[in-house]
Amino acid sequence: MLVPFSELPGDARIWIYQSNRPFTHEEAAAVKAACEAFLSGWTAHGNDLHAGVDMPYNRFIIFGLDAQQGGASGCSIDSSVRFIQSLEAQYNVDLLDKMNVTYKQGPHVAHKTLIDFKKMAKDRSVSANTVVFNNLVTTKAEYENYWEVPASESWHEQFMK
Image (cartoon, rainbow, N blue to C red; front, top):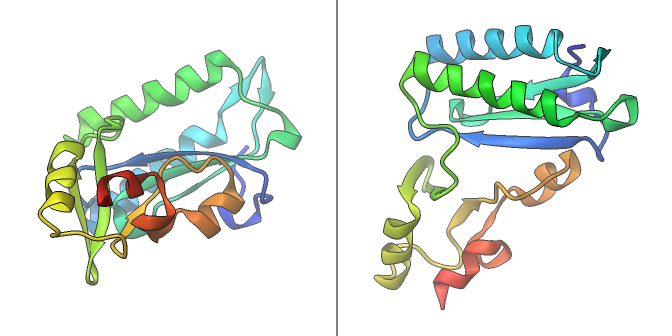
């Protein structure tokens, strides 16, 4: 059952999928509509899941699930991954590769491989103050407070030494 992302509780479980490129405005609208259609019918063991989607910067797809209303099962998580894979194929984007880093360069959002980001840190092209997207957050409250943070406040800190 689709619910507005903003209405999900702070302890809602989230999944973050970062794109290797920004979606165009047209693509973003179509992707969001597809996500909403998927979440409208998302179930676990025949029970509706109360879920919403957020798409910040036209670069991330974030699913939120109100686990108090019913948790995701292995099968329902698998179906969401298959859905994300279908978006990857349809829009020729990479959404599932966790070996990439997305960060801010001034007002712009940049995306690099982990290897390139490590090299940039070594070369001091990025610093502990560089705003990164910590996609390891697992709840909506963490997403709202600790997702977009200086590298020194996330797992990226290890590269700044």
